[in-house]
Length: 67
Image (cartoon, rainbow, N blue to C red; front, side):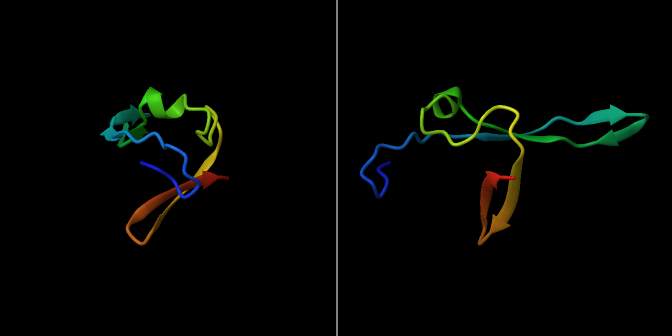
């Protein structure tokens, strides 16, 4: 995919995973979005490991930004 600026953008499929867990006898669902290494290791990837992010749904899309 090519951006407005004419740069090639890394495009790959991600996966939503549910990893249920039990804490103090209560069951909780934990959801993760797995991003391919190919995308995350790109020099233009905007986030760093451990960085706090804000996730919102807008017009049927997920928007992820720095907190």
